[in-house]
Image 1 (cartoon, rainbow, N blue to C red):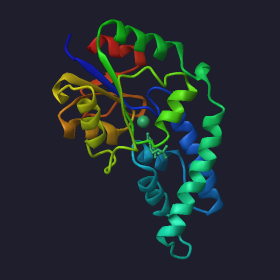
Image 2: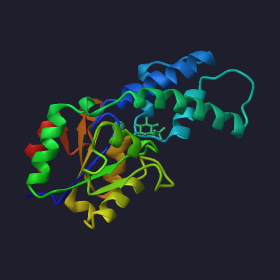
Image 3: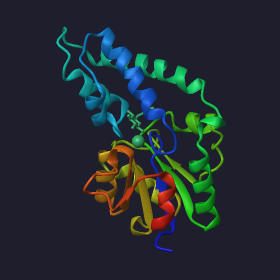
Length: 212
Ligand code: BG6
Ligand code: MG
């Protein structure tokens, strides 16, 4: 086999929580009269909550916001987002993702999460994967968000493998950039499928099995 481990982004790769992020930011942006659409939303993929807020605020024209006010806005968005997460269950994991993860496990690969999200463990619990992965590197153990490679380097360290022996799966261009910066091969899916820096293009999650 070409790789010893696979590191998965979470939102938009394992599950469709990327859509819940969009919907929650949209509610906040509308309340603040900030233009925000799916095109701008593409820039939020993979980046941290506070970095996402800064991108949204680029079009804000109201009175200047203090750091504390920005914190409150980010918390408000997260509260809206968590309400959607509360309704998730194991039925929100697709058969394709479940079966592919099991096949990769059966082949002896180590499987890890590399996500910028601080909600990672809650989401994994909701979809019934809280004990599935060999390691979880997420927004709670990093200081720099994607495109910095820190979250993937930590994931590789947690599974005790070198970046060159790990394949990263990402739906964000920032995530593919992070993989490349860390010395990983990156497979792009969804929004990152056509990204030129991706080592592989995944038209479907199960395509991972072609490249390992
Ligand atoms: C990433 C998402 O997985 O997590 C980003 O792609 C999000 O859109 C980031 O901003 C941080 O998530 P959270 O759950 O900590 O707000
Ligand atoms: Mg993602």
